[in-house]
Length: 114
Length: 118
Image 1 (cartoon, rainbow over the protein chains, first blue to last red):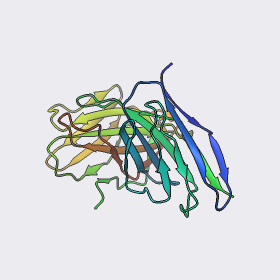
Image 2 (image 1 turned 120 degrees about the horizontal axis):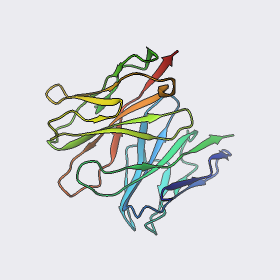
Image 3 (image 1 turned 120 degrees about the vertical axis):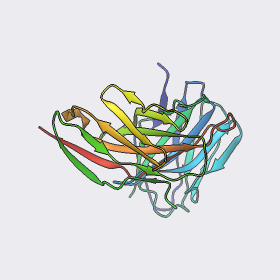
Image 4 (image 1 turned 60 degrees about the vertical axis):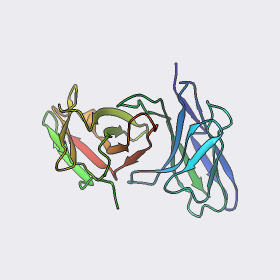
């Protein structure tokens, strides 16, 4: 079945460490997105990519980095520069269609700083 | 400036009754799309309904309908005949722009927690 796979489901990070969250899709979608969700809050856009080897900063990109070397993969690295990384991270993808773009979301990764 | 506003942090409804979740938006684009998502405690995002800015009819999907008032920039979600399984967080989201040049990132509101009582 087609979909988006995020791994791991839960991730613990020590202070000062970089961690990478995986996002893989087999939907042949061109665009991919990373969102951050804090408890009781909405989703905020971190980075997005419309094509391979190209990506754009979202509203809260500081302390994060991404790569898009393959259409299927859009990993997110949470660097030590991100001062408050504990949050729920959601990856999404979309295909260009007129109107309802058919966004698909992964099941998320919960990151906790210990 | 906040582009999507959901003013109801929490809502309660009796099972089998209807409930309206409010959403107002702000954009200068003529072409945009409005979405509602449901997020249960598991965290997954479930697409409920979509309304395009040029759609003249209000969108409906089963028990969900979207009350689209373009002049007031509101896109309220109406859930009819509430069920216990409807208890979740609900998000309104907007995609600005269209016209074949953008894949369209979504901007989300803060969400409304809906609790359905038996």
